Image 1 (cartoon, rainbow, N blue to C red):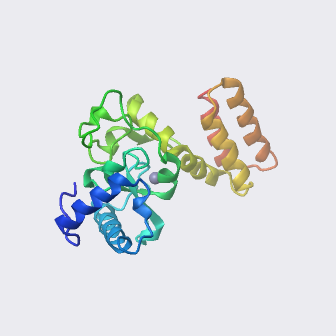
Image 2 (cartoon, helix red, strand yellow):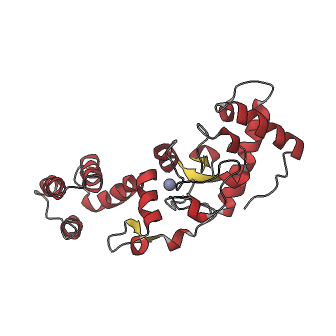
Length: 231
Ligand SMILES: [Zn+2]
């Protein structure tokens, strides 16, 4: 993981850590005295981790476009409650807009971690950690190409929940329902993934059936049958 910066001096990095620790909004400061340095830091971190993570979101593994506007620098431990880690390189990675946006300031800690420094053990996190865990040890793609927890990985399941990875799963499966109305299909699939009760899952399956009822469309039926086997 990134241990030193080439564009930012150690002195400036230390200053950023201090200023960030005192102001949890400092990451997007518009203070003209500091904003250029923060922007330079963000830019370098994004470039580094974009390359280091093989251009992929650290949570859902989606490929990230090269444009820096297309993805976010991700604070693994969120900066609202833990601004002291805002500029810690070990607490940063890159994530897609969806994962970062859904994850927001959700808890990632297992219980009883010390918060004087960034926790550095995999066991101290309930989500798959971009630097401490291996993505492929916690996730796999199932027979209908959804991202699912590998061998029941608890961290994989938690990360799917915390980062809203089922939004991506729903969008990918909705492709198989075209030319049915994409948004309605995606929404029904999201509902199916979100609810826990069997009765509700069956209701979402009938919505999906209704959306393709006029179509003789085999790919969609294959997906519906696969989901039906799960309830
Ligand atoms: Zn993602």
